[in-house]
Picture 1: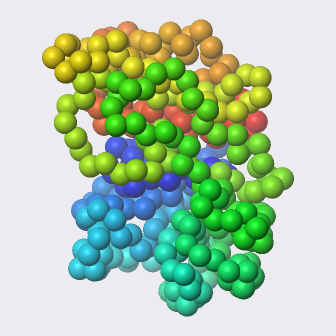
Picture 2 (picture 1 turned 60 degrees about the vertical axis):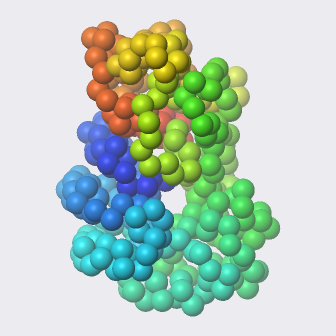
Picture 3 (picture 1 turned 180 degrees about the horizontal axis):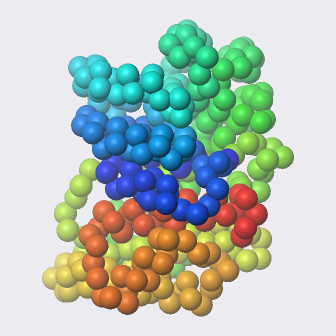
Amino acid sequence: MYLPYLYGRQYELLAVRMMLEDERDRGGLLPLIEPLMARSSDLLRCIALCADADQSLAVVVNPDKHQLKTEQAQAEWWEEVGPIIDSTPSIVPTLVCRWDDPRPSIAAFLQQFPGRSVAVVYPGRRLTGVDMQWLSRQQQIQWHVVAVDKVPQARWQQLPREKVVALHDCFVKLDRNADYSGTEFFTGHHHGVPEQIAGVADYLCVGSQFKDGGATPHAVAIHATYVEPEDRDVWVEHFVSTDITKDKGDVASKFVDAARKLNRAVRARPNEFGDNAALREFARLARASAFPGLPTNKKLQMVHHMCLMMDVLEGRM
């Protein structure tokens, strides 16, 4: 099982929608969306399309970041989204556990969605042994999504192994695109599936730190994950435009430069990067010297990563 952790930005939702057209079996894919945006129309459109395609989505029902920080914003958001979650069986209602005494809030959450399979995310708040024993008995919880770098191993290992999804922030976020170079280790936690855990989750190739908008970048970067052939770990390679200064070149030409670098690497090492619609689109754009916009660049990076993780977990790579 692979859970890409998303924040509901438009290009992320478009990445999920692009996955609906992929030829892979999506039974092992469960996008997890923690919305940050007050405007819900893009999310609702994505939910509808996923429901039509029989694609499950995990949607956080207690968002509290960015535009949804205030109780009023949360109430208005829930007024629009809540009825859709209630009436869409393919949605997995998901609660982020933000309390040191989690049982009352989780019990209320389970009662809110009777008979539904749900998920709970544990981002690192204190959990006692008694808490874990109680959580283990809650049959309604289908997935325990654990930030394993922040929750003690002795705690989360008390949960049913077949329900644990290990969440890692694998991407090292830098302030500037120009600062990226070469390759970096991404993850090896997929080796524990399914013997030790049921699945893995990550924040794809953008990381967990939310940054809204920004100035025109001095450099354009494409972060592409690949499988290291010797030990089968997942690494990420950074393809950065040669021009990295503000006053040299334009964003469009810098994107094409980075896309051509990626395309050369994919052609040289096809068994490491695999094959998917995102890589083929990057190759088409590179050949055509076409710039689709920076949000599409991010969308394609995400689609490639989702495809690669599915291929790795299902033994195709």
